[in-house]
Length: 232
Image (tube, rainbow, N blue to C red; front, side):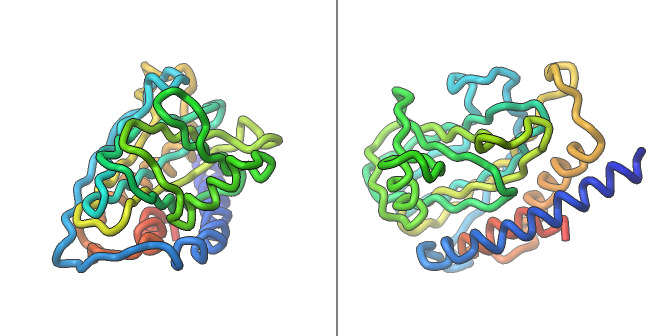
């Protein structure tokens, strides 16, 4: 059984690395970098709530223009339908969203009222156009509270774990905030993780923890790819 679990992890890693390549070009053109000497990195590991609503969203920090960059890495586990992440902007400005991970991950950006502002679904019309603008760093956000909603694309199996990393920045930055969002403790979670899924999440945790040995002030692409470096 253990060999089967490791084989499953290897298969997911292979697929993940392939999907990373597709996201790199979208990030390279838009990310603003800072000098390594100027960037301070802060890391935390948290457990996601067992509740599937935006009120229980995981807090990933404050997005301050020309000051902070927010990074989160996690897995939408088997039978886990949705992940929520909340952040606050301290001023109006044009935000950039970088993302890598498995195919079939659906990303939505919502305001504090729950209105969807940007949607990665190509069929979402104006909201999809806003999502493409967000990827390019040209979507203006007002000061306030926002939520990221992560689900599976329509047609994706609920049994298929989805690995992803997200990054938010508004202009330049001097502080990097890394969040690893893990599944709740087994006693708190009605769904038990398989060995392979837990190995993937542990790998994300270890990868982010190893950031101290990686040069700071990286491009957005390097940062997100670094989240999965230990899977290669």
